[in-house]
Image (cartoon, rainbow, N blue to C red; front, side, top):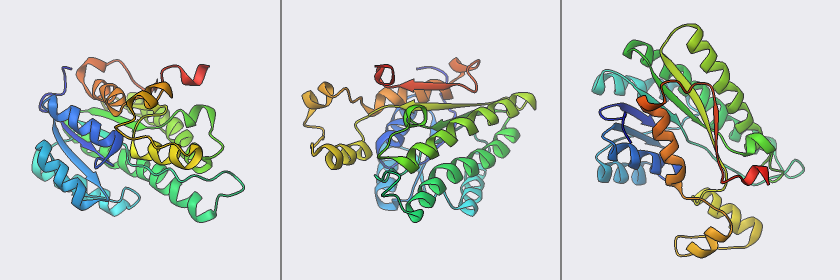
Length: 250
């Protein structure tokens, strides 16, 4: 994959799952990656292995976003790419959901993406442009009953992304903003869901089972994320890219 060499990219929720796969593929492509996560110990260890930088971050904390961007500006002088990936997925339908669960889920996803885009655009403007990738889900397109708050939050990210893309184009900022919509991918989040809802253990040793269920791999998504951050996607803006092996159309 071309186009990410020496780019400074921030990936949130990078200590596991899709965020980790993004960070791995980006570093392989020569990008200068800043990984953030609430898990300090795991995130710092993985960043050391990858040759990336790690900063602890709760994406729902607006003030922490300002601190993270200040560190990036001090260390690198610019920001070329941002992946708003951090998220949670509590299992609860409309009857079982609580106000606490609802608000926390929206805070991580919607507030976190909002704060990230706002802070990211400010630094990208000073850097001459960039690319933002907001991690949504097929839940934003079809709604998943057992993931009420998650579905609502991801739907909000979908619409927010389009509004931001149009704004950046209208203002001629040189900043693109796209959303990625994975289906079922073999991450800790999906493994937990499959275990709780279907009583099936889905781990790295269950390759045949995973393929039979149509569950993808984190790198299937990471390749798309890297493309959107690269110069190869310079005309891709404000779109929603679904990665689900046609699961939402059958």
